[in-house]
Length: 246
Ligand code: SF4
Ligand code: SF4
Image (cartoon, rainbow, N blue to C red):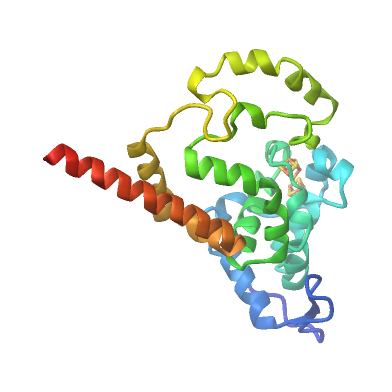
């Protein structure tokens, strides 16, 4: 499929920076990154514009969001619309993939959204930074310790998005803590021990697969902190290996 002919309006207003226009070359670059993603051809086969995906999409019930619209923008190669959707709408998808199970064309709108999110990160879009910012604390914890949570991080205040049922988590906190190894109680450090070798291996995987590059695009400070943590762990691990040799 070829690109739609350029319209008279080659530039659009950038919702991030207000009146700053987005050059056509930028719109093309963003779309080309989406289209060249290895999964793209498996997620989009055509579109009837039937709306079944939107009718079954939970996020469409609560947000100004429609998977049908996302698929149509991609299928018709509407570069301005694609860029615009990446400034907010794509972050409303809950990644439940109900749409993929129902689409008569076997498209995966949720999968397409995931590709668009990856490209938004690659292009350091403000929407990606805003969407990922609330997870900074968890990301730091996962990457620096290999664990998502320490027992005393499980509180109602830390997870307002869990809704009223969070009280069920909060209430038996003392009990939950007893289920976690004693040395880790009442600490923010770790909920259980991930050994040094595993930590270094994880870091190597994240580095090789581009995860850390993505992180640098959206949160340079967090990237710097994590790099320092991992450099220390690598040094520590090397010292341990040297000791074994001796
Ligand atoms: S994966 Fe996203 S687009 Fe698809 S049904 Fe779920 S929330 Fe909606
Ligand atoms: S993606 Fe599938 S379900 Fe959604 S509008 Fe297109 S053809 Fe219909």
